[in-house]
Amino acid sequence: MHPQRKTLHNELHARPSLYFDAPANVYHLAFLTHEVPCNTLLSSFCHDPIDPDTVQGITQLDGHALKWERHAEFLTLTVVVTSSNPEPGWSPPPKALMDRVAPYLQHMINAVQIVVRADTSFNGDLSSFGFKDPCGSCIGGGDAVVWSDFRLSEDGTNRFLFVNKRLNAYRQGRMIRRLLEIETYRMMASLSLTTAKTLSTQLNTFDRTLVNLSERNAGAETGDAKALLADIANLSAQVVSSTAKTRHRFSATQAYAQLVFERLSELRESHVGDCQRLGIFIERRFKPTVRYCAVTEQRLDQLAKSVANLGDLLQARVQVEMEEQNAEILKSLSNRADTQIKIQRAVEGLSIIAITYYLLNLLKLLYSGAHTLGLEMSPKEAMLAMSPLAISILMLILIRIKRAKSEH
Picture 1 (tube, rainbow, N blue to C red):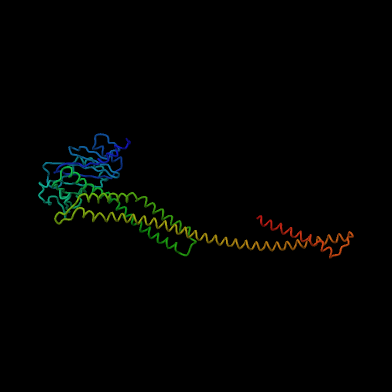
Picture 2: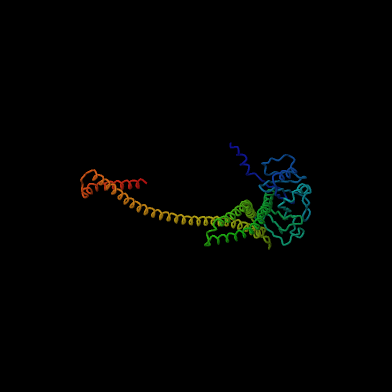
């Protein structure tokens, strides 16, 4: 059996829901925290040591069921307080819970309270819950009704009223889990909104710089190409740095947003009277955030491509100019080579004339010496005798010159 067979198979049973009957109060907290504070917080709830590889667990807190889940970027705590005689309105979270999480409140990204009531014990009066212009939906094919105005309480809690009509404990637990996940994933997805706004301001500056560099590149002056290339490289470095800093956050936003929309579709909502549905309320106000982050990421990617293209254009332009300069240099070298060849030919002609002159003088000296020695020879005979010799010597010199040229 593969060593990971059991672990991978048990992923089907990871992160189960808490199952309970109405009436109850559900308190859900989510914390952005690092591994050490996460373990420290969990150790205050669990008596036994926690395995670092364990992602979730269920324990008891003062007799109430508490479930914790460890995610990649956050930790969630869910406490279910059941009661046979529930008080009307909202009840504060258990003191044992708040005492343990008090040192970590600055890391809390989400706090949700869901009041769960049975349809038989709910008279339909929302005034005791203090909702202002609430949204409501029938969920699960009409098996439950959920109300909320999505307004934070004084302690920063988002509140829901869940009225169970025909759900058993298992379906009720899964349905409430979806509501909690919608809120937590929505907040996690919205974390990049501040990053997107800050980056958008930087992108406006980058865009103006890119326009300026493009105009400089399109100008007729080419002597400042080195400085222009340095400015483009500086802009490219800033864009790459911004991309590296924000890529993870924007990718997480897309992943969390997809989970939110999937959980909303799983609620199977329908209208309750004239109230706006919860899913419609969330989508109309949450989708712009997701789209804004996506558009900002696209702007950053497009800017990176534009800067890279501008750098390529400048390098191509410089390369063409260098090739033109090289062509001019080659043309100048070719002209010089032609001039040298002409000069060389002229020198060769003069050399042949000089050699001929000296050769004739040498033959003349030979003729004079032979005449002094008493050799009777007329000038005509001497010329006929020496002409073949002179011509042969000249031909030999010409052959040697051509052979030397061919070798080079």
